[in-house]
Image (cartoon, rainbow, N blue to C red; front, side, top):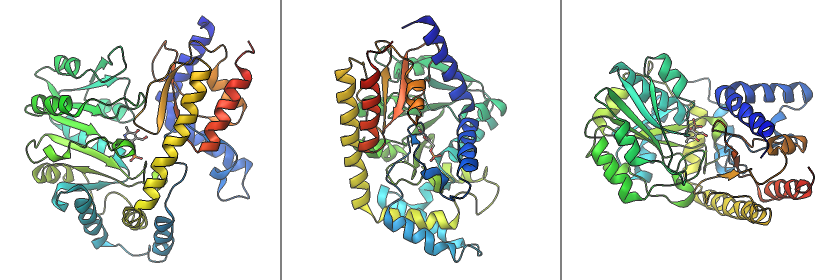
Length: 376
Ligand SMILES: Cc1ncc(COP(=O)(O)O)c(C=O)c1O
């Protein structure tokens, strides 16, 4: 790859991961002005492949429940929080005392970091990984020690342990990892938790486990009060905009975390919670989304293979791939074809992440790449 192109892509990368919130807000605002007569301006013909959103959601049952709940959204609904936690407890094999809710799991990643920052020290995490919570953690006085992934772009569990020191108050681990889509074997992960959670908080982000039934480590929370597992309704349940997430941890840990939430009604709105409750009952929809994700991803894999683009087998709703063998600037090319979201997460790297959309969206991506492959 040309140096100029690499620099351009890494420039895009830094902008993307430093300012992704603004980037998407600006993109949305631009659409809003263009489509001011259309209240559903997000449903224009731009294909959004930058935030690992589920292109099929929310489920029909969740939509119905949310529409119905709008009528009573003038009231505080004190009982909803307990009700949703009870249903999540049934789903995950815990009690409602093992669960706290957030407006998306990212709110809770922030709450757990606040808890760690309160203990004063540092946090250890992989590079690259899901980092949107890190700037706030740094502002709260929690510097981050970043550990590169292995050559195969897996979390380096031994490296993370080695990077810990007596000031480490939290280790963040995303499994499957975002942006690479790789998973650590369950036995290795369990060993890692046993070692690390003995002395420090382990914040294990399981946002994507449901796509391929990657085993959850939540069975260990009673044994390890330092283990906190973050989960979300944004992915297989397709409710990213509704903002519903939760963490699973030992009940004593949950009590401590709740003290960092300022209000008994913190977290998702009652409308979203009703949506989440209904979504859990719509298993057919989740199965459909998982199957469509596999089909759409296969189309991308096949396209990459035909184009000799190296990529990593993903256990998620996104794929990490290497643009080194492709002659054109892929993010720019896709954008010119109304597809936003191929993003870089590593400096000076030719690797990008792209989310999996619908089957037809991935066909469009492959078509654009194939049509422009030989044009320099
Ligand atoms: C690994 C990971 N964790 C957490 C989140 C945030 O999810 P939520 O929408 O629940 O805040 C995301 C969103 O893409 C993610 O990729």
